[in-house]
Length: 353
Image 1 (cartoon, rainbow, N blue to C red):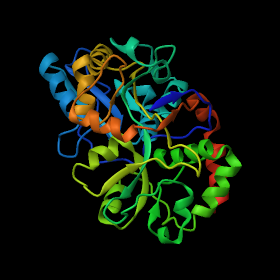
Image 2: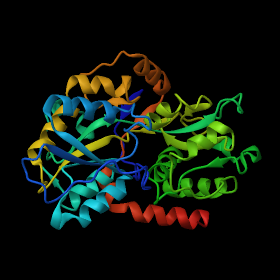
Image 3: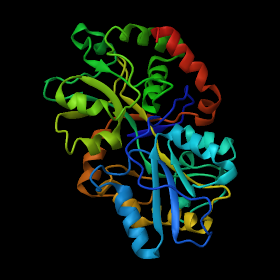
């Protein structure tokens, strides 16, 4: 896997759908010295059975500090929108979203400058130059397929136009789901331009089942064989494959091209005027500590945000194999934040959605 610096059209990242029940909500009237910290986060890092990276980190953090973590989960866009609504009565202390929503949060004045301990080991592309946010878990965009039904997995975008995929293919909706918009970003990059990508996606629409607000809900359908192919992301799908054995992860390429992907890191920022600023700083430091970063792969099935953490656990080895040979490009997330709606509108026009 190698990282190339490019400036392609950008995309949303992370589902916009509210996921799961809320395990707690911050209280803006709480005393600043309360032994609590409220986290607003995109879905994907908390396990459905209490076995996710967040579950382990929050448990260990409370044990070490006595500070209870109050957790609110949703899509990246949902969390930013909620924090914006609460600006006059701030309730979140830490917000974790995928790009470009962390840039959006910064642009809306939601984030305070804070460089957590260990952030000097985070790649420059995965943190804000001014210290308003830092990635805590790395992740990559990808696709999934049913390993049981497809004896020979697809490798190219062009293969997905075959009639055998009619009503057996689905990707989450660009402009609604982050990973859905990531489909547009990758297509623009792979096909070498916006118009070429839109021409392709117009053809692909003939096989597309239809809109889906949630990327995470597509994996069970692929595992059961209701779908043969869907979009997703590596961390989420790898974790899901533990209980969904028919999921295979792949990265489409154009005929004659190379498989590509781009990073979709979980980026964390300290919320401005937070009720528990000191506790928020402590949690950010804890998330980036070496032990917790080693557990990103062993517990969470993801990639450490720190360049000096070299995980060697079973998951890390499997993830390295998944990413082997995949060329990584770097979207210009600031450009994404500015021009997102234009590309979503172009997709709608091309597909008639």
